[in-house]
Length: 234
Image (cartoon, rainbow, N blue to C red; front, top):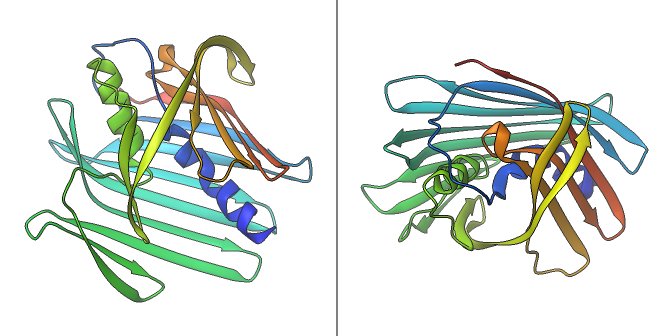
């Protein structure tokens, strides 16, 4: 259960790892969004995601979630954006589940072509030979590729264990109702190596390709997250 709760607390951020759809000319905009999530009808809580511009080309993307008494998770990514090109600089993940705590940090060292990681004080280095993205910046990359009509079927995803390829499956268009309203969406799936794990995302082009719902089936344990509200900062 600890492993599943860890993934569930982090998932609304990773939700946006999947996106596919129509082309838009809309530029990046600062915003905040709130989600309600349910884990097997037993645990319930809220999650927020916020995108903030901190400099001319630099952005901060933050995610926070919590389940009262059980645990909480926080993620943040710093990246640059110029002419639709996303370049992650660093990211951090923290979570606490019952009596278990964990923190991991990533630094994208482009000068030395290295991904430097720190996990609970343990440092490691991996070769950075291709464009790669952390859990948060990959969402922004996918959204920008959608706008440019350049979405790929796979991307390179970085975490404390190194860099691996992430594959996407597009299940097409549908309509979905969530607490925030009714939306025309694209249903996407993250391809897992384990067939007993399934992760689906319902992405709304009208909300700049944000996920309005995320559902994960992890060996029969169901996690469901749905959008409550969104505030565009402009």
